[in-house]
Amino acid sequence: MPAAGERSLAHPVPKQYRVAVPESTSRGRVLLLTLVTLAGAWLRLFHLGTFHATTFVSGRGQTQTSRLASGAGVTTTSEASDDGPFEPRNSLRLWLVVALGAVLRLVALGHKSFWLDEITSVAIVQQPSAAFWHFLWHEEGNMAMYYVLLRPWLHFGNSEAIIRLLSVLPGVLSIPLMYLLGKRLFGPRAGILTAALFALNPCAIASSQEARAYSFLVLMVIISTYCFIRLMEGPSYKFAIVYGLAAGFTYYFHYFGVLVAAAHAVSLVAMPRGKWPWKQYSVAGVILVFLAIPIFWLIHAQNVRHISWVRPPSLLEFYHLGAFLAANGGKAVGAVLLALNLVIVGLYLGKLRTEWRERDNDLQRWRHALVASSFFSPIVLTLLVSIVRPVFYHRFLIICLPAWVLMTAVGARQIRHRLWRTLAVGGVCVLSFVSTVISYTRVAEDWRGATNVILSSAQSGDAVVIYPFYAITGFDYYRQRNPHAPALHLFTQPYYGVGDNDETLLQALSPDSRGFRHVWVMVRREGPARDDLQDDSPAVAAKLQSVFGTPAVWQFKDITVLEFGR
Image (cartoon, rainbow, N blue to C red; front, side, top):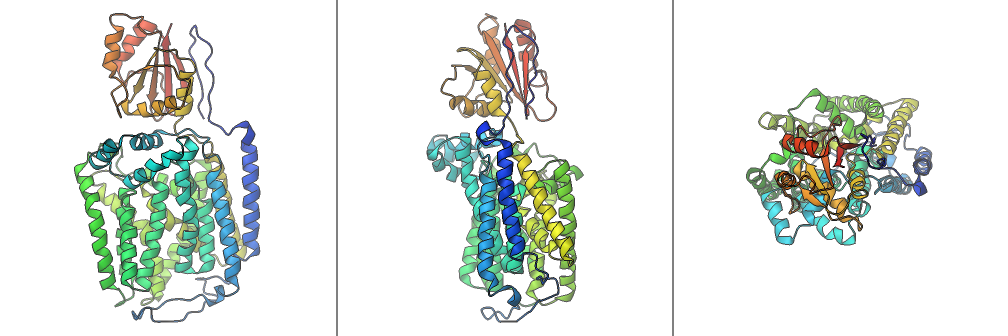
């Protein structure tokens, strides 16, 4: 939350702005409502036997039958003890979990300010049609499919809540699909636990409340992985085509989607000998390569300055990745949740090791390896690419989230003692819920508050200078939404057709130092707050200081507002 500070001038005391849930839906009420919903759903899960002592992959109550799948002769596992009368209750539990996940993704949807990447999404799709398509092809093809979907969505409105609602839809849809994925791999009980953990996962919830492509990306990862499993277990040209299209279109929501199909391919080393459906997989491969050609062309042809800020891999970034997948970041709660998740994931890897040794010609070994490959392969491939150009960044690796949740669910089921298993899963759920509640008020960048403090005090004709130049979209979005915004002169390098170069400001101030009553400066800067312009434009800083003297200062999350005036 932004902290407001000021240096005294002959102006009214600046107001303090903070992004918070309004009085009518106070944080306490939101917390109470969500907690009651969570408690009810959680008790229902216990009552219906989510943690039944007879668990799949625990070695107890497990029955196996072999059948020929589409003539391929592959061995599959059926869950006789988990089928039958369990299924109707399983459906009820699933919809309770979906309802809970939907509530968590809709709470406080529009209460936080957009951060710059979200505003950039809006600025891109608001361009005229010709400029929009030119931009996707020549400037920024990453997340192209999301921009294509967001463009008509803006007809419903341009508020934060309406725009973010587009990301909620795939976020909610991913919950039942995670159930189908978990069920297909490890049985219904593992499927419902996977869906519950995904519904509560803070990273999945945060991506569903953000005007970016990541929620769609996760959905496509789940769909393509499910189709890949169907292709491998029951080879057919129909599923080969469906898988090729699903995995191929994943590329267009984010370039890292290419790594999803690569992770699937790596898992084939664990396929039973002689059971690889190479003909059908070759058809899928042709489709994948065909859909990848435009992506690789865009990567080659477009300027890579948009990822020039990515630093070389470090141990700290590995921690950020783990905390991001487990808790969407955070310090205290995030660190504890990450530690608990790592212990449970370790149990999953132990199960994988056992399967690898004991099931030399069984699909069950491949299923475990597929999940592990879906998590580790993108990380390893990204590290290899980073030798040439750093691309290892935790947000990009959200493609590992479904595998992370699956490993947590199946790993927890390896805990044989029912009490410890309940405590482990309950701990993950409670910590995930707490982390989610904290994230509702964790502001990335407070452009709403920073813009409002200017618009509420500025007069028509005042000047506004913004650093860096591309941050002008943050100010411009909230200025356009304010019907009472005064007419202001923007001085910054033109971006998306808005703004004027700051050198023009120096020229305007030179002949008449009283040409502007006030000059407002917005500085976007990550890390510790600063109250000067020396790092951004020493010439402008010196000129404004000589004309107006010491400025008033407002500090917001990653944004500083300076008011120069008399």
